[in-house]
Length: 445
Image 1: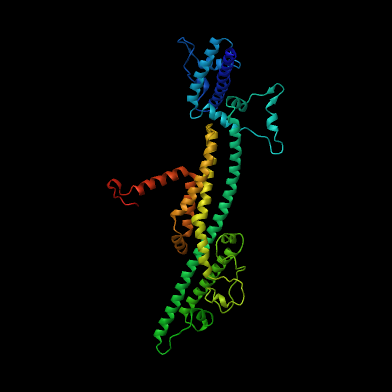
Image 2: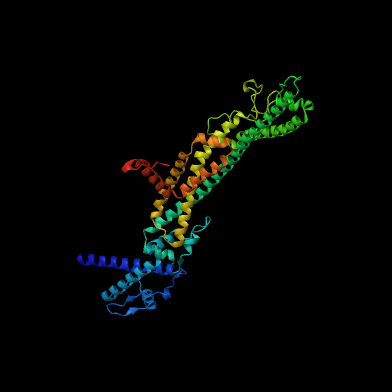
């Protein structure tokens, strides 16, 4: 029993040293030989030969490694010398390959193993076989060196493919939403500009009429509205008022067009889908957009309860509801999406960089599940720093496009660097809750 136990232990030790370590050295040699900044032939390994002071040259050391095989030399003394040389060479090569290691190189090779086509999935497997059995490749050496890593690497590769496909789909959805929200913001901003311009031109008309009435004391002061004066009584107006009426007509036409565009945006696909998640009648009860009939102005001054038909009209009172919906998308929905997009971009870039440097490790699979919820939380947290009231006011002032880009951009950066974002939150928490301690009177900015 003791003899069989010693034999099994010896075989396990031999397999660990001569099979795993030798394959790992082969992987390190293959990795270092492919790097442009170092060359195996010019390396000074400085490895002593046995107990003597003689130092093996690089060629002799590599030659000796290439002669090693499994099973090892049956003589205990030669086997021990070969094992010592193998460990020394591995240690030297690992320092040269840093930050890559034998384990990360093997894991990376298993991760990027070429697979067969979708129609013929077994093609890649048949290419690894010959008449004598399996052909030695980088993948087979990596699997022999670290047999437990293969399943993890394949599982991570499948997860990475699915995450990449999901990221592309999520990016498309975020881009489509951003496109629609940006257009809607521009329409509502133009509405506010046209409304202010309409009010300014109307005020100029009344001011000019008052000046003319004041100059003619014998004529009673005119009480006609700007619309009545510029449409029905244009021939009776002075040249100055007629010029202002021309400008007023242009502003009114543009104003009505802007209101119609906003109504069309809210009631027609695909932008009308933005209104569905919110309890707003815009986009729900109104099935069409058209001008109000005669007797009601394009600015929507008449009462809706007096409309003879249930159809919708392009009315300016709808613009504020559209603005509120767009501000919600700008502050909360888009930051969440772009936070996830930023996290996905960071993960894809990180995996690509680690594949290039052969530093992919099993921990990256677990980190992928950690970074996704962190990116989602970062995107949600960004919306907490923006006030819906201030956003609605900014949209009314025509500055909403800048805020939309800023909120989504900050969310993307927070998702891309979620760890740094939460470190910043930790610093902010320490600063806020330590306020007033140790005589600190510095105000929080």
